[in-house]
Length: 391
Length: 189
Image (tube, rainbow over the protein chains, first blue to last red):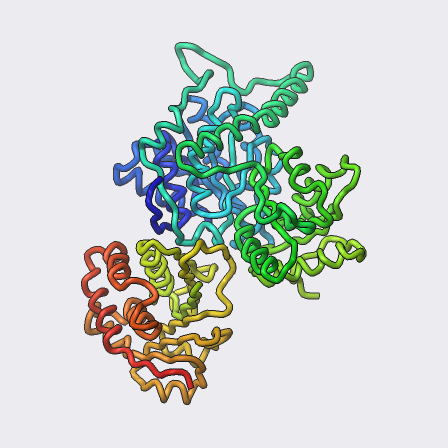
């Protein structure tokens, strides 16, 4: 294990991509992702990273370039946010359908209108069904580790799918905090070189992305779905390999002080850390409360969610996005679906928190706990609430 | 956990000074966190930055609302911003001003321990630019000494300045040291 050093998380992400020895970076700058690709362009320009940095005129082209480069056999990285991710939308399906293992860091930010550069999960939730693997990280160390882990998973011959590593804009991306870097030897032990089974090669030609007539399209979709679901086993294996190399163990669903908790928070991403502090303080006040955190979002870890949440009295599900005109939050919807088959189902109360960068504080979690406790005491289950919204 | 809020104007280096503090804490083997008040960067407009220093991992990503320490990089902000807002019990405010601590306390009704230093004069005589951020780090560490011990190691902080400022590190370190020496501290009422 290395020494903890202070680093802005975005810079850590760029350096993790450098440690992965990426061959191609194609990206367009957008707040709050900018520092990631800006630093990568510096690393290439200064000769620290032997890669092709392809500056482009739009994110649509950035993702298209990534598709071409990874198909040609080059390890490929990009990063984006918000409107940039939305502009990639069309090509995201092409990357996943063609089974191209691109690694993309997404600095999560809300979508316009109104224009907001601030953090929530609205951008990635709009890309939920693009067929990409999707994980969320909580801090700089997570982010750094998961860039290397993402290449290990995506390029595995049993997976061959693109992956998004989601890190919260500003509240994670712009924070200077401590993290341990990997040594070149640790990277070498963990991450083999990219060795695609199929690549664009004039001497050994393959067709990528042909027409899927009605007689075959259905089967390709089934294969894609099975590949996504099947990727979980490789992800878990890679997390365990990561623990062998650097001593940090990650899981699809993680818990904090939740063993004996009747009431648990359920969260995803950077605010989970603030929630931990709230749990600490509530525990000190004698409340049996804990936290369950989703790390893996696609494939959705149904079994792990059932195991972590079944048997609880009340789940306080916290979303960072609103499914407008729909059921409330996308995470809560998924969680309810996972719990539906249980004989005794916990009550689920839903909060949409921190939209468009509204700060989520320790005090906010305590207020949510009080509402959860009221339901645990037999009170009515309220509908979803936009936390802190003014009337 | 020690929580800190920085008040400056865009371009005065509030974010940089918050980061220097976090880097110094981490280099010492403690935990540090620094981040800007998120938003479009606007030169000259009142801005904030935040830092946390702790001997345990920091698990809080919200802004600082009850600071133990407040740094005011520009005295004109005292008329515009309630810099003492939410100041924790026993908290400390340091202000870059040529005026006396008694004067500042009387005019702006600032609670808590108050440190003042003529940051602008020190900055002009060392780095030769009206940028007070490194001065105010010195003032802050002086005003928050506990049993002669600073919140972060002074050498670790100078090392952080050296790494950040490279060729222009020496005058910044001089400003930091001079401000540390010259800061006048007025205890809580």
